[in-house]
Length: 349
Image (cartoon, rainbow, N blue to C red):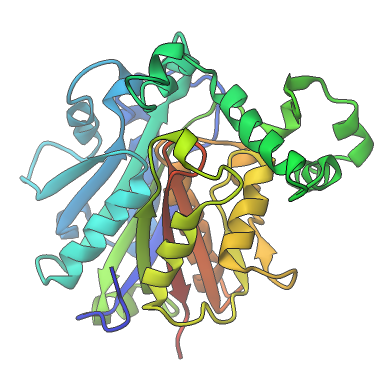
């Protein structure tokens, strides 16, 4: 979707996420994680929940193990008054996309977007994640999620597109450790070590969007959405070049309306595996002058169905905290960077 001439200006004005945990004690409906996250967003924005025109969430029934599991999460909002609400089955970055369109169309002036996932509740996370693969030839084989990523990493190594030293440098930077520690790490799925793979993470995240003057009332420097784009590659892994992700490039093209990406101060990339950062950086053409995922990103903590929205939230926070003027938030979904979303954000004035 080309976004060069949006009908209205829309900005991110608040962002919060729950503490990352490898095993949170709450229920799978996310209420315990979401309630304090909502409260922090209200405090940041000065808005009351009754001033939110539209609510949109991202989560997964597969992960929760029951149909319409997101309905229970609405308890974190409150029973009254009635609300205008929607949900996407996936990362909440795509819920942000829907909320953005809702505001652009004039059906809302404010929106709260949230995502949540309790991966630790899954008795067999590999089996759950395999359900997103081709149902005839791949899903029945039940490949592990790290083993699939290892196939992608190996393809790049064999093609000379990256080296094990490249992966080690990314892992060391992300985890704040020395290269020697990475080299001594146990193999998780050859050629990936434990430091190249994301930990199981429970988490929740929320952002508030506001239009035009409403955003200016809330923030001195709102993080304006300059463009959003999304695209998807084939679900058939055998039909894809696993060392590339054309949908990243296409999502960026949509976000810019076909123009050059332009200067970017900071990019928050949703790359759960170390080698995937190389793929996404290459597709976006990000140089060494761009700060890459200073939050630590999903390689350090990968809360399912909110990690992508977190990347956009951190990219927005860098603007309204004064640390950057123009940032990029990236989210991915599906196996091996299949589905990608790019958000361009900027401060103005």
